[in-house]
Length: 207
Figure 1: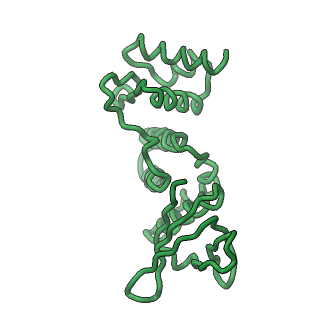
Figure 2: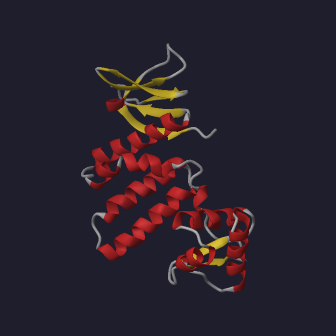
Figure 3: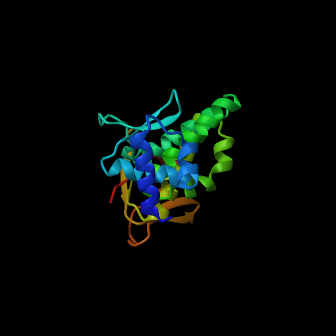
């Protein structure tokens, strides 16, 4: 069965049933969980808005067009939410932890870039987060890794050593080690370098 037939089968399910669970979608369409989430996203983008009912843990067509869209999250927002969810998962019981994990996956696959590849590299650090400073540094590291991996321009808020922070913009970011790890432009040899210990906030510029 090709992708088109599987998507049509999913639309048929959602059209003729009040609610459809993820397990039913996977079984009926013969697709894995990740593909199911992507198909639901594709359907929503094709003006068949899909709503997830948390009480019944099932999907339905939102005929009123009021469903929230996870792909409206910017990459920064998605990273912040997932880091917060991962930290929450460490302080709740296994039953809630499963729901937190499922929500994290939904946010990951809703992004236009394979953000899960970045998070895999930081999984150990996510599991051992402690104080606010460590959490802030981890968020900055994930965003910088994403910018380098996918060639996105970044805007940084950098501690300048004065009462005022400094704004720095870097095109085609790359890493360089010079006493400390620095973020520099991979194409501009005379670009300003931002030292990792001084970076306070990272924002990715949308293409």
